[in-house]
Length: 312
Image (tube, rainbow, N blue to C red; front, side, top):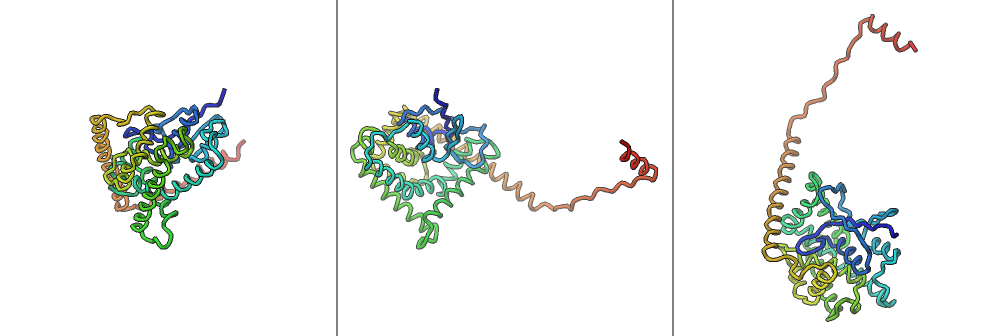
């Protein structure tokens, strides 16, 4: 009997099985290859401190990062690329590199750096999935990690300022989306009628951008103009995750939005409370540590104590 495969990942919303791109990549690949994953959605029992998911756990292995997880699944004979030619395999690697270089920085910026999106959507949603007080710490840590990742890859000369970096990453992302749309054309998947690793990556990067309701939708608007990429995401959701085209009814989506607004207010109140407590602690007078008085023994007690130390 094969060892159980358990995937720890962020959960879903807005008609998606997961709102987290890297989690979606692994989940989609598992569906395409037939890997029997048991999905464990992160909830209030989670004790991780860094948000490094998805994580695949077996009896003998713990694997993180989508590329490593997919390689592990291939070694277990769950291969979504077995029908691809050598050229198609090379094209897959090239397109994945393109996605990570040109599209991923803009996706990270949309979720984690753009302030309106972060404070009204991303931070409240992720904070609602994890226990207190981690809910006040981890979203900010993930936001800083996303910004550092963007600046590390794109903040090189001649782009010195964040605004210049932002403008460039969105130009690159739109060009990447146009290229993907032209490559897909009218086909169901990128290499014909069978989904592969490339389809898993494209779906994982595009579906959250396509479905999540953001107040700032610069890249989302451009994606929605490319009807074949939107159809691509909808087909995978309906065929492999059995999620309807709309995901939620309008009334259901209104309820989700209302709950998210309440979460936003709650998280912001908790954050303000923590900041006030921290300021009060910093401003309060610090008393010097008290010295404990030294007890002096009488001659009789000292002689008796010395005798007890010497006795066996």
